[in-house]
Image 1 (spheres, rainbow, N blue to C red):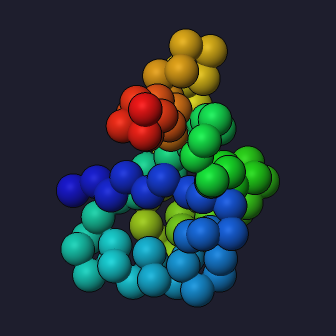
Image 2 (cartoon, rainbow, N blue to C red):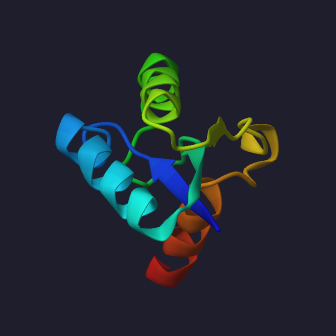
Length: 94
């Protein structure tokens, strides 16, 4: 089983969030895919720093939880994680 975890700066990338993710994945015997958030207009979130994501990857691996960092894609065409949400939000507010 894979857990896709979208990391948002100062929303769910704190130390307590890391510990909760580790415990959750250990109970499920799950692998983790850390997802990068693409910035989008009208969406009040920002991506976690790559260094923070990389640190999580190293620490989860050290603790025996397989983890990958998803390569960010789609930012150039407004199609990545976060950007479609911003587009839909703008459409519903018009």
